[in-house]
Image 1 (cartoon, rainbow, N blue to C red):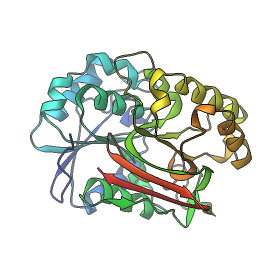
Image 2 (spheres, rainbow, N blue to C red):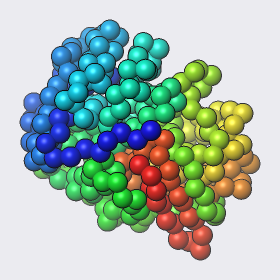
Image 3 (cartoon, rainbow, N blue to C red):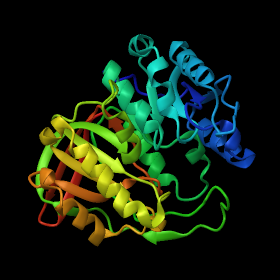
Length: 328
């Protein structure tokens, strides 16, 4: 089930299902609001978006109430997460999935939001989107590519190809908007050759793995699995990505995956092509399916928006990659 696309004049509700709006600077909030309004959207905030406890989040009750109100409000056409965090999985068993199914609308976020996105798809069949959060719209420089794919995925019905950006950044732009560091993007590379088409699931790997063994984990049968991870583990990212990926591949229906698309790792993770290829080569489960890496999504910028539950087509051969979002 695909929600109606966003259009100019639509109302977007900003909600905080993970971390609170309060952690975002006033400058960033103003810039994000201005960017969204310049696209023709009306922006409203959930009642409890600013509530914040010792974890930087808010109560389960407040987060669930805000999401239910956003889905119930006929004026709201899109729901945008404030930012990621650590605890969105707390709210999953309290969500009214019938309400969500009966009021389909665009829902977008990434990182910790991965758990909610995949759970909603599994429980309702509603396609929702891995893409920029409200805070990202406050980025003053280097946001053009991210915005282009936000529009292609959420404001158009047409299939599109995810074409690599010319440059990328991994700096703390939200601290200093003027001193940015952009690097040349060499584009995606092939780890395993092949061609495949399938249903998209995934997002942040360690967050997706929180769903294993629960009613909220989508089937991996006939899927193209999109995976990324952050740099919070530093040098341990290599080992943690390896074991988290192996854990995912131990799921019974992982043998029916069609392909894997890996996003870009942050610099402080110290992950590189050689290390990632070594990890993938140890996974015999992936030996017969296409695997490409360094695609524009994850915890760096820019990031492409893609549909959880949509259809992707990947081609990897002769040192050439092509990644298409066929249905979104």
